[in-house]
Image (cartoon, rainbow, N blue to C red; front, side, top):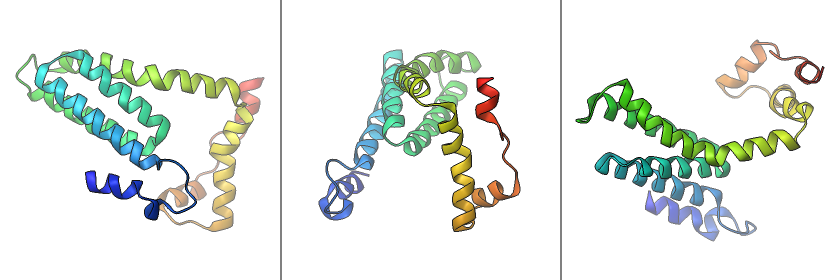
Length: 167
């Protein structure tokens, strides 16, 4: 992991015209930090470490949401296994106790960013970017993945999303 992080940060890997740090380097660092915080929580059973892990994942959502989602799945799997198989108060109650500080950390970063995004971007732009553009791109380029085929098979589930939300 460390070698790939160093490789991603080199000028030859990210191209000569790329200015600044490559987003994958920062995202990998946030994934490693969040994993460290989660391990510290499991070792010491302090909720502060869970909150810090959530903050790191929330920051990672703003940098690279795909890698943040992968680490989120890994964290929740680890927390669920620790809650049901761990030595301290196993069960669903332990998972709920762990969920609150973790999600508070995630939403402390993602919540304001999402609220700002929804406040500044119109509904038409959001529906166009998420639905219409993807469909138009597929018709131009042709299907390449299973998701592309599914978008072609099923019609737009929200044909008038902008009109519904405004009036």
